[in-house]
Amino acid sequence: MEAHSWTSPPCEEDAGPETPFADAVQRVTATGAASFHALPISGGRSLLGSRLRGKYQALLGSSYLSSEVSYGATMIDSFFRPRACLAEAQRLAAKTFGADYTYFLTCGTTVTNEIALDALSARNARVLADRTCHQSIHFGLDRLASQVTYCRTRACCTEQGHALPDIADLVARFRAAAEAGQPFDIVVLTAASYDGVLVDMHATLTELLTSVDELTVLVDEAWSAILAFHPGFRHTSALPAARQVLAEMPGKRLRMLVTQSAHKSMSALRQGSYLHVIGGEELADAAAAGLYRYHSTSPSLPILASLDLARAQAQSEGEALVERSMELARVLRTALENDTRLSGFVLGEPPAVAETGLLSWDPTKVLIDLSEATLKLGITRQEMRSRLFRDYGLYFSRVSNHGMLANMHIGVTPETVSRLLASLRGMSDSFCARRAARPGARFLIAYPPGVPLALPGESTATGAVLEHAAAGAELFSV
Image (cartoon, rainbow, N blue to C red; front, side, top):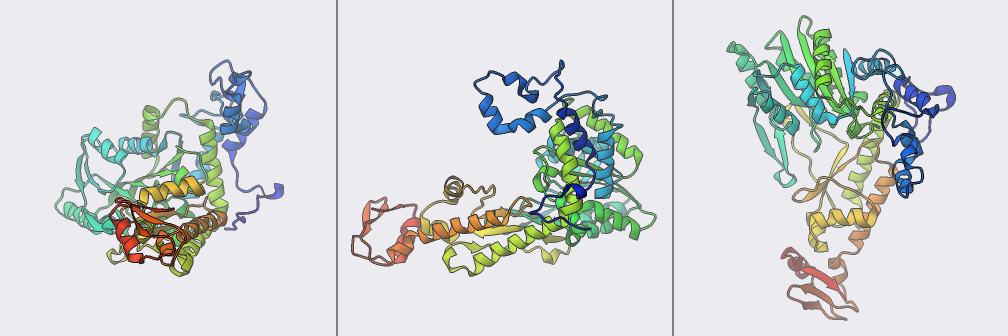
């Protein structure tokens, strides 16, 4: 599939894949219609003359305010019973991802997982689950009084806070239950963790289906939706893997729901989620019923439109975007390994997952070991994160015992990586240990106790600086 360059917007002659719902919202909002129904903020009308109008405009922009509308089924389409542009957008998404049916949601994947469990009839069911699944699944199984058996977890890279699902144990438990005549009703899997652990979905589904003729499974793909569009990751992506497994194992039946947080890995607005169905009309109807019960009756049209657009972008540009993310991750790794100006910042070791045969490591995740850097700077890793945000405009979510995780998603650009490397070099250049290794014209003081380590004209050993920093002292150069 031909991919557009990430730097070049598509021209008018090649507008890319269809986006029926996004186009419909754009057409309707362009009319400037006023509503006697709801959403006073629509078009910014409730802000006319308001002293806060400027702040709204600065945060949301005129285009977003215009697209934040609330129209009924006859104006655009029905959310709960779509027949027009939303139905077509969902059909295109199903075709693109490889599902039988796809639903758009604007309440996030936390709600989507609850809907999926209801659709799979998890109440009082015997469920075999991945222990590392999201809290929404744990809460949902508890709410439905499911009889849950969790597979083991494997301790791995405790300094980075990793806990890996033991998928081999999950497969063994599933097989043993089937052979004992007490098969599990549902299997719950997390296809990708935030830390970058990927489940080989092709191998796992194949192993599970060797023991039964029909398999019911919920797969949470919150963090990895975009990977389905790169050939190197299709075996770790539930939908393409399922299609291949079913083709390789004729006669087997699969009832599978896949939940995806589109906003985590694709160009969709926050709380935009997909619910994909493999397994026919009955399961799709159950998912639609759950959607009606649990989803907000005020879905966000901008979020729905962004799901349509995100699918179109992934369809035409997804492979190139993932490839760019992988290349930028390689650039960062190479710099951490070879750039002498990055003294103290070390490339962290990813979890050792290869030996399991059912897990792999996402190469778009980069671990940066901060052990030496924080010691030399005399700051904690949390302070390091705060400094990167405050002084350099760079945000990291995951900071563990020794390091931080760089998630090289498709929104990370070459400029972003250059800025990160420049910030790390700047901090490395300012290490007190480096300055203290040669005579200086300043006092170098550790507090507590407040006694100078070096007077003007003196030098002090790097080891002494590190020793005080490790003991929790603040270092001052005065």
